[in-house]
Image (cartoon, rainbow, N blue to C red):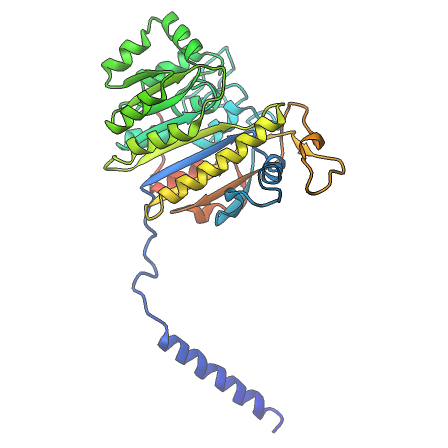
Length: 376
């Protein structure tokens, strides 16, 4: 008799389970593959470590955890080492993200057999080049010089990040497809000078290849977007370049693709100017939210991450309600701890736990449904 209540209770649970199963909607798509991403947008916060993200939220909103990226549905931590250093620079850090392989500091999308400034290594095929190969439209937006390490790693291959001319020639002499379709950012002075030294009349060559070449003119960028025309926009290095209108123009062009697109948007969020760094981080976060809202209902994977961390941090005994700026400490060095990865959209579920920076390339490739092949 003492076991009878347990038997009765067990039978009751069995009946409930059977009934629930019968009432549950049945699906024939249980084993169906998820839809691939049509578009991938990679937001790269250069040097935007967790301490910077935390400080930016407090600086911008008076409270922690108020940034959009802190509430994206899939979050992870990415280690950031290069092939030979625990603390990476932007060249090696971004190379790992966009090629899936580590290289040495100072090297742009070449293998670890490269010797900076001395010997080329094996070219590493980037996610942007895969997109070009498959007929997607591609874009690169940055507030750093357009031939600098982070943007350069998406479209170029060089054994030295300092060779702006050699790097930017890949815009007009691409390895795959017809080259990046939208490229907008600062660095006009050095890019024009160094490509000219290589015998490249950049404005003329770009126009012959079907680009609208725009120099220091956001209205020109907007007109190119209205006309759905490929565009290269170069702006002065000095001053504050706003990536928001450039990103809006780029999307207007790229969204016209029949096959989808890849877009990388970088904001350089590390400097010893603390207010400037935190303001840029907040502004980038607002841009990510705006773009995410724009892309609702589309098969678009959106990822935010950083190429490396930075030694900026909140220290001391600042009271809540007071400005944190006097209590911020920065020495001006890159740092080696893991950085945030935040994602949403098709394939974002693979962003979880502790990851290697090289795995972000796999996340993007898998989201598109692409297989890796070698660089020709």
